[in-house]
Image 1 (cartoon, helix red, strand yellow):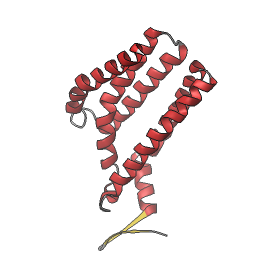
Image 2 (cartoon, rainbow, N blue to C red):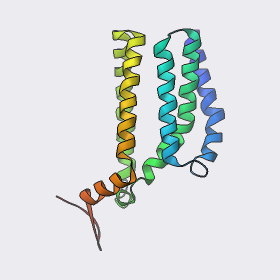
Image 3 (cartoon, helix red, strand yellow):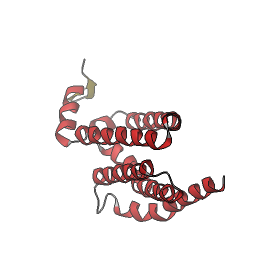
Image 4 (cartoon, rainbow, N blue to C red):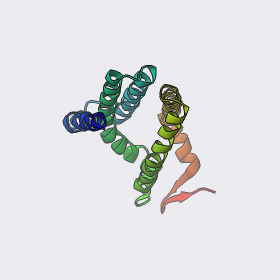
Length: 168
């Protein structure tokens, strides 16, 4: 139990001390998309380290990686999501509600995935989660390409003088 508390402490220290540093850089010197992708890659590295060796040292390293990832990612993901599509922002509260649904779904899915990891075996289960997360990051890279965003926006919404109407 004391090691669990130490893990939370290390993670919290990363958020408290590194978060403000990265929040000043993100958006000004580092693009939101780049910061989000960097956050994902750091998170994958943390999971990969722990899946290869389940010792206390690698656990601490994984916690540090996850803390660093969230220090970068929390600021970048919130800001990036709200700026990816200007047409969605014209519908009041739509972007925020979609983002909230995604976060709540993630909060529900996390314990289920890690329960699966424990059932399969910690190393193997975390390895599977790492592999799936890596594939999802590649899908994210594909989806967030600017050309694709423009094409999807044109398919979903048509613009006219009175605002946005959803196409059928």
